[in-house]
Image (tube, rainbow, N blue to C red):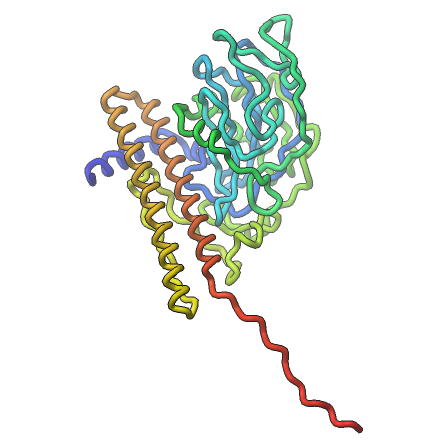
Length: 394
């Protein structure tokens, strides 16, 4: 087992050497940001450049040095027939905002309930569908030159005016993945293609796209082709909401200090402190996950403590089972990769998927632990009213 873990760690180190820091800022591996991204800007979609290109909406990415920066929406050629794009999204993870990477697959999975527009209204995709090996575009939400592209249809889509860019926390979208959406995320899928990675790197290197410079209104909102920020670009019409700069002492990178407008709801915050706590080091595989340590129950009542301990033991057993199930799944995929002699790109995509799976499980378990400890925390008795001696009559 130790040898297998060591091999996987070496493989992942190799992947780290291949990808630049900019790529990982987009992928969001191990990144926990203490304040939410700005609202999504309002913009028009550029015309589809050619048949077979699918729309990938713009979003706010993050870099330790420059903060949030806008990745313009763009048209991308699908990696294979039948694949659709599930956009990435920012979600509150219990101690900070984490980015959930987008992916290509046969179904559109959960993307935080975020209304990215152009067919991505929060759940599923209404901008088009695959039909007989060709992609048909819904011209109600997509700009397509019908004199060139004939595989189109027009179906009305309810368009929301919400521009919130993150899930959870105060002010975030209150949406949860359905069982079906979760199953889509577990099906065969691949990460962003090379053109998307290059597109993100180009956005990161453009100072005008940083939120600190454009105040939530990026000058380039969308492009006709990935990485081309000069021809076929579309400017932002207006910011999606009031821009709130992060506080001067806002933590960046792998920290989890909630900012002002992005502070989580009361029930998700520890009541004893408002200090920032560093996020736990990111784990890349289920085999590296450690068992969560619960605070021993101390209610002052032996019977209650016994009950609480049983609840903790039950949750620990369930989380251990989750770890083992995911580990077995990832081990099987590593064996398949060896047997099928995966190339570097396939290995990199597999490692990205395993990292995303592992972090999602860890976020889920951390939230479960916090909720249980808050539920079991001793409740302070209300202070008794002070008694005052009766005043003597004058």
